[in-house]
Image (cartoon, rainbow, N blue to C red; front, side, top):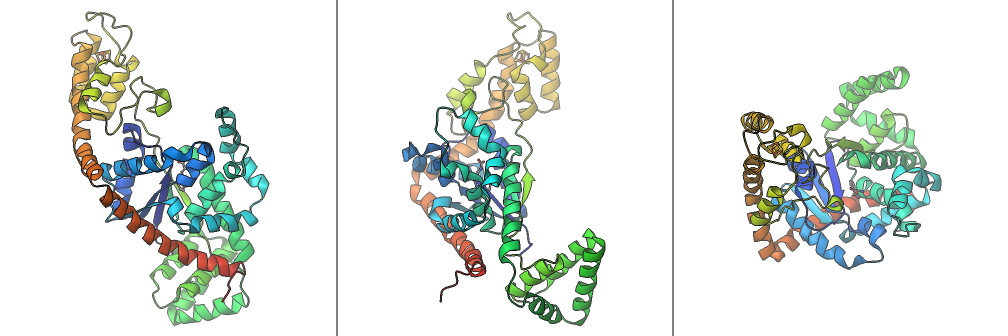
Length: 400
Ligand code: TRP
Ligand code: SF4
């Protein structure tokens, strides 16, 4: 507990594009070196909006997993799994639904937004209303404290925090809690016990956040306590009961700066993407035909890079030297647009080559991919079961 555990999920959208690569995957790849990470395919979440046409979801899942692996998500470092294959998520979702006020769900901003946006679908379903709660179950079941997401998902993480807090408040009280907590303090041993009590008092009486942090660090380092005692003492610090579920935090991913071929954000719905597995000829053609500053109708007309989507790609792919070459050449009509695009084409192809090679290898060996996911599901299940044991027990569902 309290060591950082990172969890994130993606709905299965099939083959991914460079927007996903620059916006999400590169970040995951960085995080996998810094934290314990779990990444999963949110296939049930896909069903909340695609319940009328579910047949593509499985294929989309495998394509997406191949792209994760091809991008460099390393299965020896991270746990990769599929949501629906860890059935415990569903149980936690159900149990949480018992204590989730309807109003909380109705007030999540994405609920009305999406309903208004996706007018061609009837989203007045139970499952769609529960979307954020299912997401909470995904997060809370691993006691993940860091959740890398984009800005749009922040309300869902906040919602998850509130659910965790409510849960701990409702079910975190055990019989004889104070006595058990005091006994656990004693087990810390003389010096540590005294320090713990001091820090706890300082936090509770003076609201000293640093004291809280220090006390948590102290517990983090302690090795001679059972998990139950440790949890008790984390909870006791803040005066509450046992902390059964951990409140997660959004680890805000910088908004993807990846522009699409038309200068808008790269997105499937704008039809302006380069997919991670786009073949080199198509990549070349797409960039060669992408629009430029309309003022450069003829080769001799000077242009303004700021008005050109190609310039935005230079921001992602080119160094200072190339960029000043573009700036000079464009504004003086010294270079043509095709000439200007060439370094971008080269850079994209260079970036994609190793990714595509790995993707090819995984595509040729679907069993390897299946095994990676089977292993990941197994690991995820073990973690999920641990939490569920505590959850069931605290809700009075401890049979036998
Ligand atoms: N709702 C997220 C999205 O659309 C996907 C998701 C589902 C998720 N469960 C999650 C993200 C848990 C982070 C943690 O992007
Ligand atoms: Fe755009 Fe480059 Fe053409 Fe200028 S020279 S308009 S930056 S493509």
